[in-house]
Length: 579
Image (cartoon, rainbow, N blue to C red):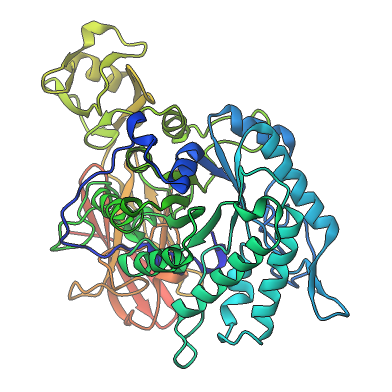
């Protein structure tokens, strides 16, 4: 993924279509009818990206650098073996040639031999471990190729051909489990006269294809992975990629897209639920848009015999801290996307780190188990609502938790006496006794009072958190629009769901004001440990007037609080809660 151009992820928004959905099921019987690329993709299964290592480079002076330049650990054979042991069948090893090539006296570009041999060593480790391996040109897409004007005599085109000529020759004797992806997330700065951006991508893909096939060896029939424009899964770009692939008349071509879900959901712009409507007045949800993506892939590629790999999937918010996605809703997203990929015979390759890349290579404590279950071809069960339940006072009645079973059966709650709960299999409803809840409530101060681990017949365990809270207390504060303002808050177990900056008329102002809510992490943040809520500099732009402002804060327990601010030029003053 291009970390410096995150806004290009907005291409992930899918066009809502009025097309009926029909699912492509991949069974053992159907597998014999698959095309070569579909059979190959089926064997790729679930995959993992070795990210920000061989695709990284120095962004200060663009000097030659190694795989640690973006803060990631070196790739070791132990890491590769650990990934295989965790059930991944395919691995994508992004590589950026930018800053690592030179222009020779003969007018051709050559990748640094030491760097390329180091990269090949990792490819060979992956091959030896039994992986299907995808190699590519990665951040070259935006660091220089995006400026190409469509002229084959231009430097960018000649450089691209030279680089692929060297890569194709260097890896032509690798087994067929190694595939070549022409370019990562291709995009171009503009059309060039009558040459559209899509025309440019077609020419680039054709150039890579011609070079690869002309180098002989196993490259005569090696799988070549062809991206859509921006690796977008929308219909327009998928159709264009299919027509290009069909024109090659080659069964050894795979289409690829990337998917990071909807910006307002996975980027944490206040839409926290996987099944929550994304936009006011519309019914589309993040789950529904996963369905739409696979519908597009099926209609455009799969039903026509073209294998598909989701070369990257993930999310657009941090893995840790208050600004991360709601943990249970992220798990639902990961579980469902991997289920739909398996159902449609699509390989899915996770981008962010589902496990530590340092010994002992532990799974991520929140979402790793969901990836592990998908690798084991299992679905996971979960509560239909949030994985957090809030209690301000002892309860008068037992509570019921609706579960989404996904074909599994409920086993038990780990470490909890069965007398405290019961499960109705006909309604998939779990009942927790009021005595158990009140005992936990009285034993603990504000915060998490119970972490209930629901165990099912298959798939990941589900953590259901019971949280005791009191109404948050806000203090006064001072700051400025350059550095932001940090408001003292006694959270008392409460957690912020979303926030909005408003003028006195109730109109949204400031950063991301096109949407009802601010972006958690860049416009505002919450510090539960130190007790503060920060309005950051990105929250303020020319749309923020002088005078009175309202910061509207909504908590996961349902309470909405309004905090009064006063802006005078660069100065901000936090006055307190208004009623």
